[in-house]
Length: 287
Image (cartoon, rainbow, N blue to C red; front, side, top):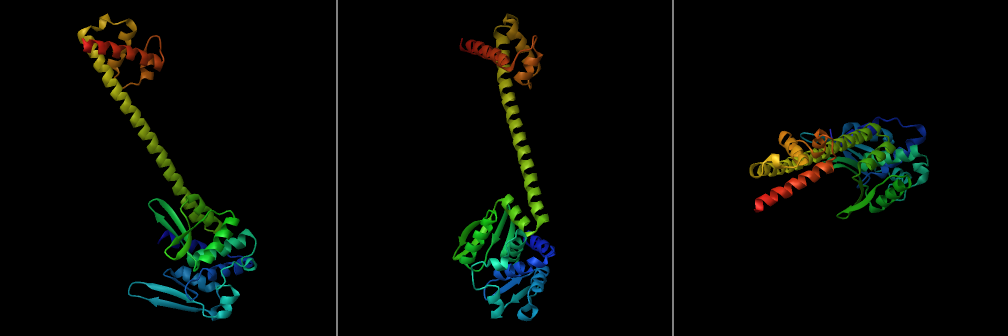
């Protein structure tokens, strides 16, 4: 089952209060396409849409193919089309209602008949694709007025509304009543963010270790050169101490080396001593 069907099935299972049934019916018909028709391969959604409409004024067909069944609902009744403004793109506030519940129910209907949510590699992608660009403009206005973030775009000669933002998609699904699917999106987003933070932390730690190892290898090389040509006993006490600590602790950070010194010295103090060792080694190399 696709995530889009999962969302629509959840929307079909949500209860519809008496004062919002007209809003839902209006939304369903508003999203019809072509000659006022709706086609789906999902049986549950098809029978939900059928149940919400006047049975004597619609045509319900089951179109069977070899491996699948498509369900088609047609509204040929001009009176029903006119009553619910199918031919009029302007959203009728008398039919949508004014409360959040009623507007949410209207959008639920529109989404069921002309909406989708896709799961892509980059994340989620929600679309509304009503039959005309004028209806897109009206839906954009309505959703924006009710605090939802949605974008208008074009594909060929067709207009559609879309969102690729997980939080915005979750908000829209919540507004329509698909709470569980909205939570699923946010949970997955949280998991991805946690994994991303862990990966960044691991990468940062790995980079720090690499830098420490490379710096340590260079320091040990300098110390051994000094030991061979000059002798460790000829180094000042503070340099001999840090040199011996490095030889015995090749993987240790400068800060941790400083904690082993007597007395304890800071990271910058350790770094300063290694700079002196490096200068001395470079002088010996140049002789």
